[in-house]
Image (cartoon, rainbow, N blue to C red):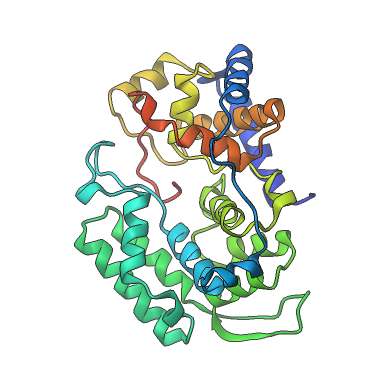
Length: 311
């Protein structure tokens, strides 16, 4: 897959890593954790299916795609001040439970007006639960309802004022080319393209792959969605070695400035290290990400703190 947006993510990661001496990637750590992953494979392999088969399981495929898009539009920062200060146990899992209860995706797909009603319902539910960064979350939810005029080069269908969320669902359901779908997400739905490392955009397509089994070949070439849990685990397994400055900031709960060199170098090293781990193990990015994420509670290492809507 030759796709400049994705290539630029890894190019940036390498530039940041080479420009900083704050995070070291241990070759021995890479080999050790790769061998550990081979000896302890995922118990439940990520299974694939065709998107059309989802209908036979009594699931509305379009509604599922829309729900995933809504979830990933605001899937970031669930703590206030410190990582353990989480209103009403705020987390991605809690957010998704609230989404299931307060957002009717089938109804939302019926019209622009109904989409806005359902998004407001979801927003109000999150406010009641005192989730952080609700100002940013409202902006990103509203972005899904932005009405746009667009004619895809690979389709006869023209969109005349339909919400970009509906257009994104069509891109997925019609099995458009991955590069076209990814480009639409990051360039036409405000918020998904803000992150230098495109975490939420990458996560959206990884989730689609996990649910529907689409874009299998392309997914294998994506970087992982870089946030704070995987670098925490890479440091735990001695793959990432932090400078004293970085280590002190993390241990003392000092917030990293968003997109600072200190913050970006942690995420950049994570992208580089996990790519090498995938090459050593033969695992896909989704599998590498899953392997580390399900083990995140095995250690008490603190992770770096950054108030951001990128992750």
